Length: 77
Image 1 (cartoon, one colour):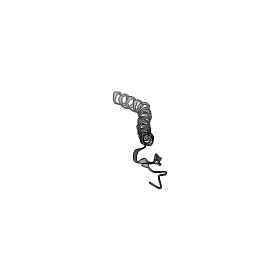
Image 2 (cartoon, rainbow, N blue to C red; image 1 turned 60 degrees about the horizontal axis):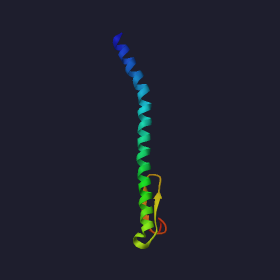
Image 3 (tube, rainbow, N blue to C red; image 1 turned 30 degrees about the horizontal axis):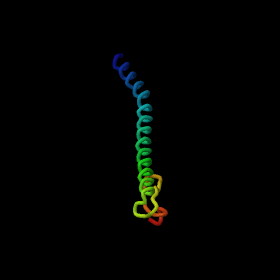
Image 4 (cartoon, rainbow, N blue to C red; image 1 turned 45 degrees about the horizontal axis):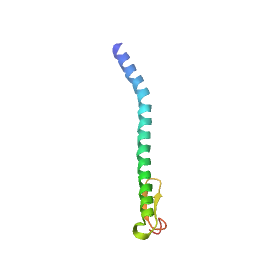
């Protein structure tokens, strides 16, 4: 009987905690990606404002990555 109670409590705690931890994980991943993109945008802006290499600068955002580039467009970099 006691073993059954322990198993039931463990299961109940797991059912409550797992979705919360998954939500926390997703929020942390989103925060990390947001910080990375923000940093890339600031870097490109800084390079464009200072006229680094006498060219334009930008950020190409793709489904799974982002790239800071120099030139008028990502294709012509």
